[in-house]
Amino acid sequence: MTTLLSPDSRLLSGWAVRGGLGLASWGLQREARRNDRDRLQRRIDARATAEAALAERDALHRSAGFLPM
Image (cartoon, rainbow, N blue to C red; front, side, top):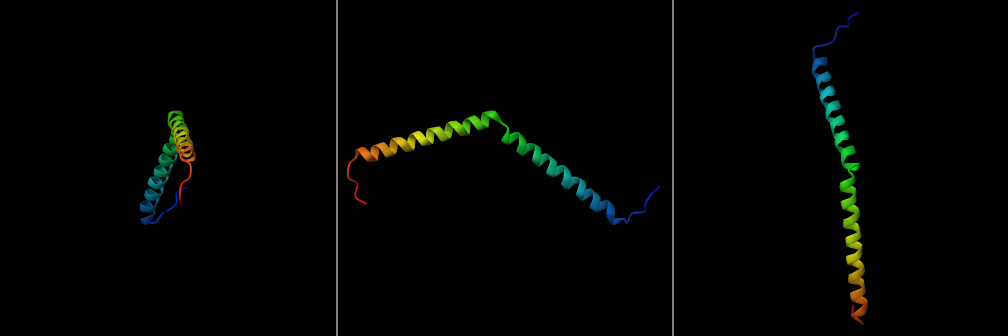
């Protein structure tokens, strides 16, 4: 059984398919970024480095004695 569609339905269905494919590829790229072990390890290392730098800075401030505010 065939159904008659309006001529504009082709345009709308094309947009829907392209939009769906674009959304699917975006989701796959996002998933790949979130599951990238190397990227996650770099973020963990960067956070640890930043925390160590803050701890060192705080230690230097404490050892400086009185700091006027």
